[in-house]
Image 1: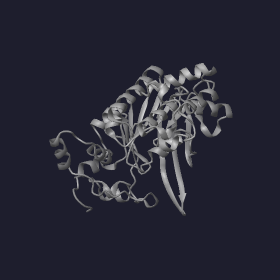
Image 2: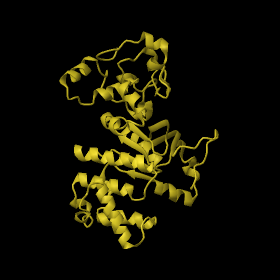
Image 3: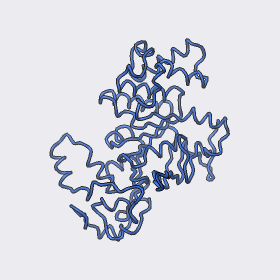
Image 4: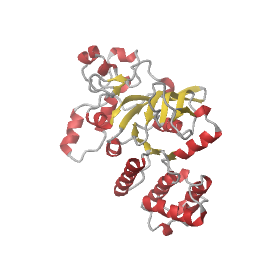
Length: 352
């Protein structure tokens, strides 16, 4: 796949694209819509942060982008080519170009392989290094890049001989072995100390800027999305759908959806006065998340939304541009419809 397949309008296709992708799991006779009609894209050198609570569907969406699962609806394309129609050679190149950094290094690292073996096998298999000397030098460089120094102290060890943070750094190093075009990082810094976390994010930022690597960065922490994705875009997911998406500065500084505002309110503040202001501003009507197998008839966020109106119980919102904010999409009728926005008043406390 040496060239990017152009789109119908002549523009270059995104590096990765989910086009109305859905993923439904069938569990005990019930349909569980983990991802529903999600459309997103990432260009070379761009970072897209997927943000949401646990169970929001962000990891499932990332697995679709990584080809680890096939969508039950819609399509996933790499450089304009549908993954389901790729030839064997195209699939091999796609596998090399798109790398996934798993959240749990305890499960993602093979316990019977040394760190040297874990990092050298993909290098040999894809011809990224020739000869033992070059393989060893590349492994040393990878370990150094993720602050596992000196490399000689780690190469002969096995995963159980490392701390959780060290294992996570090995997972990141493995994701970098094949010089990927797209890195999908699933909470990849969650097990690291703050100082190491910042250093690793800075390293990934340099990789994006210097080598034009695209990123899908998954996190439940909007503070991390702000730090790593400030120059990119952020998409907020709730119960399998994108409820807000736009440039990260706009989403962070001018959130439109009440769910995004709730996530921002959950970010710890060092200033007690700011914490008190957040509490005074009101919160969600309920902490209980609806069951994916029995979603509300209207807006899925309605049972928890402080702005909910009668129509929200029966009508489903669509993702559309927020008034006056180009490139900033939101799925909320109260925000996008001037009639309901004018009539809206926040509801504190329990349901009406």
